[in-house]
Length: 338
Image (cartoon, rainbow, N blue to C red; front, side):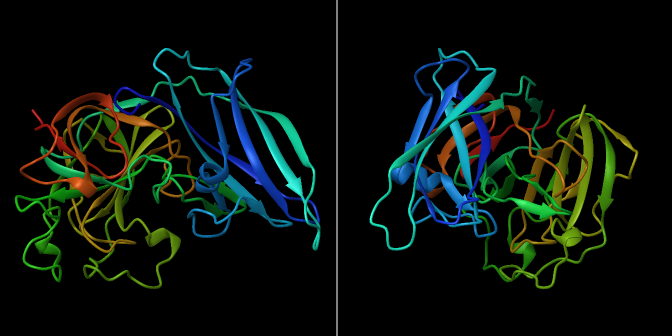
């Protein structure tokens, strides 16, 4: 749901149980009973989509899987406008195996591996802020840090940040801060009121964690402190909105409280695993910051101002988007709350 594009997002986990390395050659994805693939990943495109479990989720130098290792293929399939949404995805994986000292190995192929496509409608939300220009930091995109974050807790793996956004405010100087970066107060986002994006019920509140020094990543955090001060609200059946890194003492809601869309619930802070004031926002399938799965959502309206890497305050596109989610590191203008 990226403007005029529909995207299928999921992860394909491939584990090498052999005694020799496996080299992935191609991954093809088919919709329903189609004979032509929706996409084919090979060479550089395949390496860019791969990450080894348990490592920093960056681009791999080669699509090889060592014995006993697991690779994750991060799938981001953009469907053509005229293509019906498939109910099922199937896969064809081509690879070769080679023992130490062997020069080459014949290519083998495994097929099928069905993945059901969810038919649930993505939540449509209103703005978490009362207007302003904001950067959707590490927003939805196949290469974003949020997208590549896989968390293992209690023997299970989770991807709670699959569609998460780090909201960074852009001020009248075209930057995220003014007068240096030594004080939280110098960041335009700091102290900005955070609004409920939908009607809901508060399920969790943490409001005891001290503010960080900007540009300094706090040390010794435990899992329960990564989000800093935060609020989780149930905003639909099995749908929970998390607002994280909030300013200590600013949270205005309480567990079990019913909250209306647009209500101010807290202020933007710099707490938890954060190096500057911003709002981490995500929607998941359970009321846990980390032990949950990130699910898609969209905003009813905003104006797209272009990618953050090219943004200039006095020269940028201005394109209205509706019922969409901003793409990775996009700069957008949010509407005022009425």
